[in-house]
Image 1 (cartoon, one colour):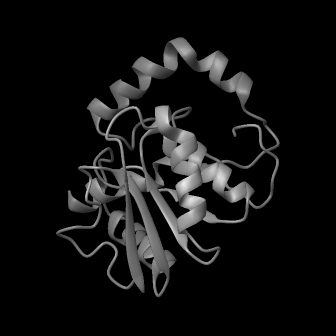
Image 2: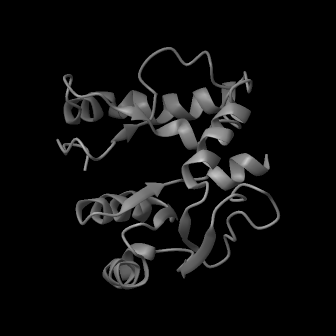
Length: 174
């Protein structure tokens, strides 16, 4: 996925390579703990001529010192699914958007529950079920750990609009 050159697919990476002053100290320390021993390997996978988007777009609140943009980012996300049919793919206990208004404005929401852990073990079944369940006009929002990224990519390859929304619902709750 990281080396995909498709113009119809947005690839995002975490903004962990420069100044970490915008992050809370705990978040910055966690980033350093991961990046320092892996920096060269990670950078070797990136294409300097490619534009990458920020994977932290769905983590717009908890890791940042300044939360001024969080409300704006949530409003922009809400515009994506405004008046759209949405298929939420989530772990069995996630209940994304339940108890808040994150998905208010969507025309219709359908849920597809997947295993809370090890969703990758049933990846092919998940992919097949989504393709049977969703129309090409359905916006597919996925919160399913690492499986979400691959699923969003594979669905985009066959013509669906799919988003790995990560922990967006948790961030919105916070």
